[in-house]
Amino acid sequence: MSVEDPPAESPEQRLRRIEAVTDADLAHLDVEDLLNALLERVRTLLVVDTAAVLLLDPSGTQLIATAAQGIEDEVQQGVRIPLGKGFAGRIAAEKQAVILDEINPTNVHNPLLLERGIRSMLGVPLLIGGRVLGVLHVGTLSPRRFTDEDRHLLQLVGDRVALATQARISHAERTAAGALQRSLLPAELPTVEGLEFAARYVPGNGAVGGDWYDVFGLPSGRLCIVMGDVAGSGLAAAVTMGRLRTVLRAYALDLEDPADLLSKVDEHILLFEPATLATALCATLEPEHQTLLISTAGHPPPALAGPDRSAEILKLHHDLPLGVDPTRPRHSSTISLTSGSTICFYTDGLIERRDASLDAGLDRLRQAMTPDRAGPACAAIMSQLVGSDRIRDDIAILTLSREPTT
Picture 1 (cartoon, rainbow, N blue to C red):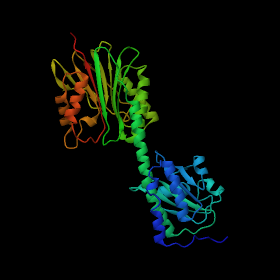
Picture 2 (cartoon, one colour):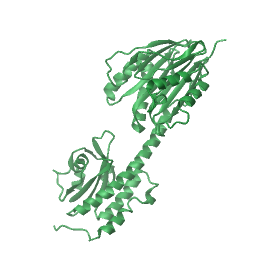
Picture 3 (cartoon, helix red, strand yellow):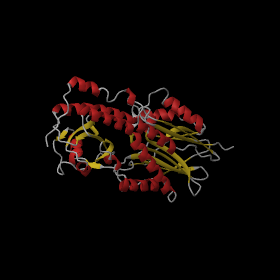
Picture 4 (tube, helix red, strand yellow):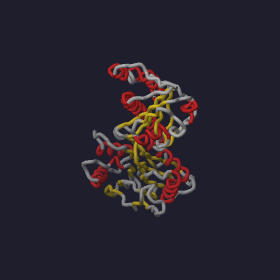
């Protein structure tokens, strides 16, 4: 069979057609619809029979068929290609274009390509700042000599596709992370006679992450208070945060010592989420509200203010963060919560600044602490430590005050 070449077209004509690949009329589309629209234009631009985009999964080990034209089975059957395997896997691993003048079982991993009768293929990596986002490939049902010009043209298109796709994915992830964060933070803090709670959450640079707080009752009548911070940002950190929050709540049904609770969460991370790193502070308040039992896993210590003493940063046994070494013992400290006292739990975004030391941040918090009710105390802390500053890291803050006895 003779090799077919596409009709001649000047580079200028083809470049003008590239400019239409991501024009304004696609701006309203979501990721899937955007990719399908782009692939249809790619087929016309390069005069090919098939076009497909495979995106790298969050683990960075597999390419997932996300959109296809002319070979829709890839998406419908959920095709996954291991990084480094076959045609698409090789493109992603090497971050270079690959041309196959004649495909066969030795140079492709996906049998659908052979079943559909594809003869020749060209693929390019989708790159964002040198990082692989996925692979764009095209194919023909008759033999085709893809040229260096074809390769260059498809890479130009691939660069535009990568930028447009990353923008849609980032927006979708921010939206999903925000919704997840809002759904997992307590919609309403508990009403407990003799206590008052107040809390705030502020995303750093407008992007949510893995900070969380939680307050819930235990079967014994104690209250459990949790403040945590998962390393990372965006949807991945928010999802991990949600899992750890659920795990901790489940263990709290049987364990009430905060050190034991955090040890069990650490075991969970070792077995099921070994890549996770998080700090957390867990406290239980006994029913009479006079004593707090607190354990910290690499988390900054609370600040406490009382009517009969100066505000202070609590000195606790500072154990390792979660996800470092679950064999190391954890410790709980007993803290008295006297009548009229207020305690502040927070994540490090409240006290850390690039132009100041951590000690300076802790000292600012100590000075902002007053034995006021939880609501005014929380507002005063945020006003004095944040004010009009642009926040780079998430901030979660929870204040608890014990009403004065008459």
